[in-house]
Image (cartoon, rainbow, N blue to C red; front, top):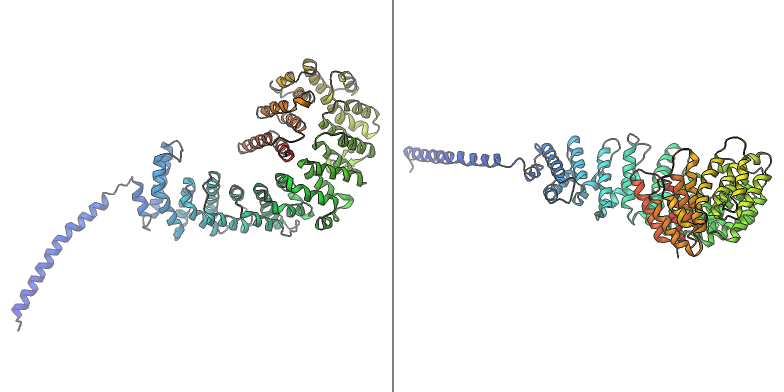
Length: 575
């Protein structure tokens, strides 16, 4: 039986034991505190671990951001630097996990997604996908913008392999409405640029679905969201992908009056698939496709031929040329005739196209006004466009028509026909052109054009090398007509550098395009290149295409649209 004394001894021993344990516990806890205090505050690993602690998370994001900025500064902004990559190995995945887990305050969330976007590492794609999937207008706009910029960077570097991100981007794009998200135009641009940069094959059918949606252009929101945003971007995606199943939907959209604002991007997309698109376009012109024939019925006076003919002209292949020739014979509308005839200048020069052109000129009355070309006189328009046949024998015709013009046409012809005659004149026809120019009363820009062109012609005569050298000289900026000497040099290079010399001449002109930054002179050079390539020139087309892409990325525009169109023609004509 235990006595009170026994119980007392037990209590004393227990107390003594507890005291001993307590005495040892204090140093152990102190040692743990010392270990925490010794963690390197400058080591990114320290802050990557602290992302798991809600109390330290915001500070951890900022400290990792500081580490990134310092590393990039020391590496001259080179993300491939070993120290930068080492930081990414430590920080990207923990940061991504922190973002995707959610539960962040707004300030920390924005800082975190910006940091991941700035890092631009492919391991962060789950965070970018979440930003797209969780987008709420007016609440997570910054998250969307940073995710779009990061996705664009990854796609541009060929590092985008995450299908979940590809799908999330399109899902966000397909729901985004500029009409309701109009606080930042940059947000809209960044989202569009991301979609275009990714241009994943899975986007093709989805883009067709967007394009085929009926719209009411009078509804501002529908116009802004559907036409200017979803459809415009979808058309560009289709063109970039060369998604041929979309060709007929593109042509249907082209012929749909409510989608007329899409004409330019649709034309470009179809030109990127020139050989596959041409039969559908020709069927639309001839009325052999029932769906397209029904749409054509909505255009009075065969006006649909203007839309389809323009695309066919820039594709510039034989079947399209013949379709335009047939349409010229069939149409009775003088405005349509005039415009279709101008399209013939985009095809390789041939006797039958030139004859059809002159026949059209003879058919249309001298009072023909073409509202779709600024209300210009039809005959004057054709006289001016005839320069692109690069045929010096047309000078006599131009001078004759100018002299015979009466009434309003007498006012319209000289400024249209005489610059063309100056471009085409040879040493043999120079005197006659000069006399026609001198008949213009008072001061006239045509007189200055003739003077500068005459100087180049007198110096070079029929010497192609001399004209090429003239193109290497500095293009004058004033007065406006002073640069016409360079335009003349381009025309004469083409006229005298054709035939068996065409390939060599064309190659030399292609090499000069990048050096010429004056828009009108560059236009003259690419028009000469176009004429010298009746059978196409895919390598030259690619070179010009890349030049336009590079210059546009740098914010430069030296006749970019014209160079781009010629580049497409050179590629589409090639076998």
